[in-house]
Length: 401
Ligand code: C5P
Image (cartoon, rainbow, N blue to C red; front, side):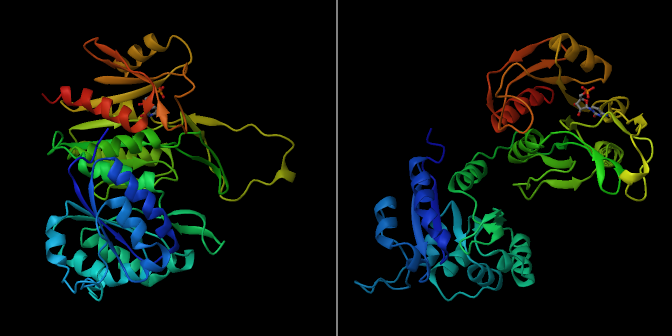
């Protein structure tokens, strides 16, 4: 599918080792139907040749203010106006610093300063450079300027050190670009609360009761809702996910109690709540102040008390808000889901199939059946969580018609 058909992308490349991945990223953009103009910094050319990039993009690469052979002036203003999106990948610490401070000493920065379009950067650098206060200060300046940051991931770096600073893989950058262009307005003006992830219930300062929820489904819903123009509040338990979209208001919590407190506040304002969190049903009656010593006991009985049911609490005061719940059942799945929808005053329930190995915790795919309170239901095949999020929101939008 040519998801970027007809889009004009300026691909900025600065001088870091991750520049070798930019050729693949460029290929992905072209395959998706985009027209791409590469702008590369002088240092970038040390890592990847303009000849490779020109062959892949079908356009001469722009690097200097004046073309070497003809002396022709390259207009950064024209390029800035031509672009529907500017993506700088990799963005080095130096390029980030220059962008944040308007130091326009190369073609890439002058193009950035002239760009009327949205700008995304995919930083890539060594972990200490990434963690340095000046880099972090520059990143937050760029965020305030409206630049979208595709946060680096953790892993082995070119220095062989392990930490945060790896440029996101080209596939992930493409996904973010597609996300940007797929933005719709169908949920504009709607306030949506999403709960996601597990909850951790403390036993003592170092131990807890938790579950395997990764938060991926809830994060995909929050991203898709934001892409449709909704004003999203995401209340999440402990997860290792970044929120892709800067417009999402993210509130990190740990326990079910904390999740309830945050959700209740956001619920007052919202038009719909989608409760995808895997909330622990029970919590230890007491949380010990200090670590429980093994020597002190041969065995122990942990007394658990019931956690608040966030869904039911919100359901009791929902009025005209739309409430969407999830169900994961091992037997009589369908009947139990319908029963749960009634009990918790959901308008719609998303039943996760446990029959399919492509569904469930920590997977990138999910298979669901969506049941509405009017009795209608749709079974979907296994899809990526992002596509499932889209199906859920299509169904949610029916309630706003
Ligand atoms: O009862 P069960 O946990 O299967 O219900 C699942 C649905 O209820 C999910 O939407 C989940 O987020 C929500 N839930 C909740 N608070 C709880 C337990 C579940 O909001 N304490």
